[in-house]
Length: 217
Image (tube, rainbow, N blue to C red; front, side, top):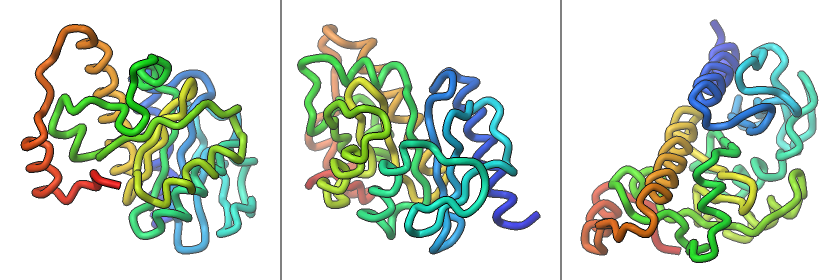
């Protein structure tokens, strides 16, 4: 099996796994992954994560122009912005409409600069600070502009009233970080109003130092 065929299969396998566990529903969510320096594989528009066809994934060139496969997701501007601003760190991008992260995004006291409380070590290690961006209409190119405005300083953002977007060094890394984001948001909602014991500044700094976490702007 070629490297491209393996990546096509992996996108569909991981997408179905996330769908089966309720991390996204219906035809929501999209994934992209680098095939090489000049091409991306992207999930098609209107497709459901539970039944993606590896042969029908969209292939985009470096200008984000479709060169093969079905028409791509309308959220391509989101993905393009991460590849442009974090080219060395980004081999894949995942965007979901996961319930707990969306719920947290609409609460009035959520910190837009660091929307996930430091509940677990892995939340800090895999995500760093997660930026909450404003609401945009789905498909609005301004979403990509908002990510470009971060100048590559964040690997994960949440679009208010919409859902999270995570960039990773490869497809597995992006999916695992996305799952960590949703799980941390779930824990934040479960412990809300209960005065949970969060990681303190020294504990966070220890993780940042040991695991080379992107934490400060």
